[in-house]
Length: 210
Image (cartoon, rainbow, N blue to C red; front, side):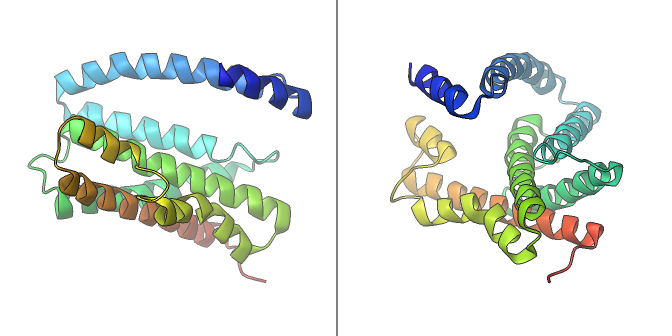
């Protein structure tokens, strides 16, 4: 399989024997676990369980976002948590009530998947920002670097790729124009959550442009 080829050369060139194997093990185990948990969460339809799930998601996202840093001061954990909470939370609330107009804010089948999108993208953007800023100490370049994947996806969508959500909807029989509307919503939500998370982290940490 191609993954074996990639893993071989990654290990050969980087001498890193742990990252890819551990990532694969975690990916499989976490997806299996979340599959069972989602069945329970969806069946429960409880606001308390949904809130707990969102808290756990933000907590792990804030911890993982700091992974590129070798030295992690304690205040960074609170900064990353608050940044992802605000960045992802604002986007999530706006989409739930301003776009989808859900009857119940804790509808698990709607809230959990959308929360996963915004929190994971906030996490990745923040992680890229921290890695870049740690290496360069250049605030403007670090912001640009953090948003490269998101902005690239804006340029590429429809020409190079059809995003996963849009593809899934089309395969399930949804009208492509309806799928496009939802995909536009998702992409704007992702950019907003990523950008706001970075801005909040910058403000909390007192970082300034040179």
